[in-house]
Length: 79
Image (cartoon, helix red, strand yellow):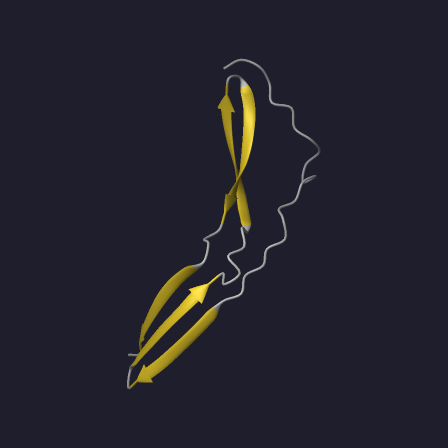
């Protein structure tokens, strides 16, 4: 690949606003805690990065987004 990449002034761009609403429920049994939940209930596309690729001699940028609406399980053991 020949040519130069011309960039703007350092730190001149910013990611979009990040917002996530999560729900979590937990239950304790002696030394074990079990929790279930959902993350990103609004299913918002939260930008966490930018992916750069060179295609046909052109620099292409695309957003990297965080997880969409997703379930999770947490298991805690106290010792």
